[in-house]
Image (cartoon, rainbow over all chains, first blue to last red):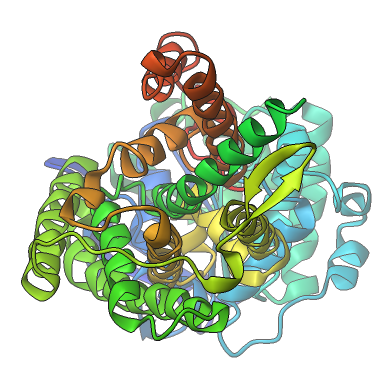
Length: 244
Length: 297
């Protein structure tokens, strides 16, 4: 089922973005339906992270329309957008290294708004690997553990929309498998819609039904993931990789 | 031993007000990344408030005046944060520093308008106007009281930063303001709260030194308190409260020892130590080269 056939969770229209005077996004349009897992593909610098930054109103100036569950968030501050139900897992995870994992998770309660936060026990049931990490400080975690904690932290406020930015970046293949398994279960366990920015096509293919492909800040392709995964010419043109 | 005890006690007593001022400075730097030059103005006004509000020689009256000074300066701090600093955050740390300097001048000017230019003095509280025999040496009661107050403030700050929700948010904001925002934390409120606490501490520090110092506008940038406080936050590591505590007490004892052993060098110890740190460990005791803010580390 495409985004347009479901009720809309995320609607981005004509999104432009600038870092200072340098324009990074050019009229980006995205439609994501409730409960979908949608991929955002592109090379380094294509505009994936910038799109998320613009949605969260962080680190770049933007214009355009952004609706989450039908409500405009374009003029809101990042903390208001978080409380409106949008969670962001950045590319570099940004775990608070001076806090314990438990404190990292507790902090996310401030994004709950009027929603009941996910309890630690519920998180441990869903992500059992967290159990042995819970009292460690952020600076004592490996890259894969940080990614797991970053995803768990994002889930605490029961977000309606989860923006996952390159969760496989810098991780070993075995860890990537574990992360993929965890992400695959999230929509059902936490009733969350996911937009997944990635360069790793096999990873995106295993998790998403549709993809948007970005190049130099523009959406250059949109369609079913299976079609993109089967089209070597499109992959060569926009990703310079091919499916193994 | 007879010499050591009064040197250490006097040094710690000298370090405590500096720690109290520096802890506010370093808290504010850790969260807002602003070197609040106006802190000297807060410190001066705290001392001046005591000269006005102190009613009688009792310890209770003095304690009440100290509290009023802290609360009064805290209110000034909140207004300053909202009116002066908040509009400048996005302009960067240099502009914020200039704003802090302008605020410093304004606060000193307002203090002169209200309290005039004549130096003021405050008597010791009656109950603390004596000395103890400690290890065969005479130690002032007020000095010991300062040490106790410093201990209470250090413990209070530790508990605030490590055991409260505000403390966790403060540490998060000091570490990564952007991620804190993205987690729904009202960073603006955290900033205002921490500015209020920092200003409160400056007011309390000013009030605490009122009985041991002549109080006039020069106090706002005095070489006895304010300049050492700036040095202490550099030596301790910008943004580190434990670093400020250790640096303030260690430098206070060093200064006290130099005063006894080599009086001609007295006054230079702070500058010598900060010069050495800037040359060999510019991030300070608890700072790290990559990240200078290490709240409650």
